[in-house]
Image 1 (cartoon, rainbow, N blue to C red):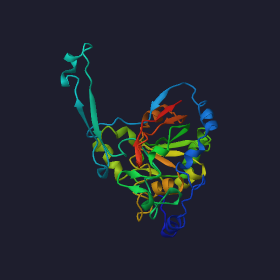
Image 2: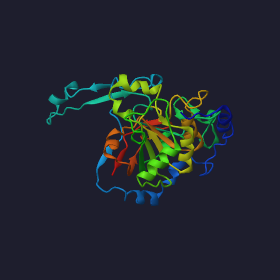
Image 3: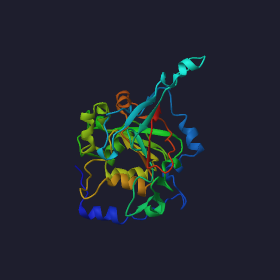
Image 4: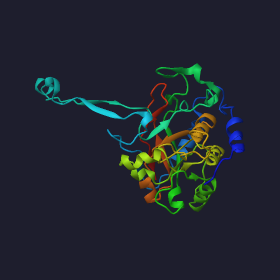
Length: 309
């Protein structure tokens, strides 16, 4: 397993404290700025069959979730036969609605640039204390993301390693990714979204089996995160709770890949993706469509992105 030694760790985490955006001092979208009208129109030409894959998991009471996020809860609060509406109206009207409680990082979710800070600063050198309120962030909230339509790539890291599920703590490497892309004749372009299949998503419907991935899972390693930045990827993620390798390569850090991608590179992350059906069909290049719910000032949004091949 690749390791980051102390010398490299100090270099990586202490000399990259300038979190400036290449898109200007007012930027709140990071690499999503790379998805312009031309990129959207070009991406729309990718599908060849029209087959659609849902890249999200079903959200339900009792689902797998990180303990610090708290449980998801949904309750029917108005039943069709409540309030006597059926008898009152000529059309025998029977409405129903529910109420839900959840963390903004529930299930398959899209991380905002306000999700990770480095030494008291967010992406684009925005001081945390200048923008934080009890009801959300005044800058970098998920509402800034907007709808995303771009080229999508899925790297089947599990298949590339000849296994169904990658071992926990295994960092996906740059070399593996380059080989996979070459073998499948895929050339990443600026603004593309790139995701990684480790095999974990096939276990999501079984909380007892999926919960273990919160403590130990394969995922994006630190050098791969830097490579994604070099490629000018706009969105990344995987089929695990953290998308990055857990535990981290440098055990003195916590979620360093999240921190680098979000706070330094301005690359959004989608965790807990459902990718096993796409992996089975070899759906590696596709049109990617995702529209985060614009919760004002939120640090994330549950999403249900789609891949169209």
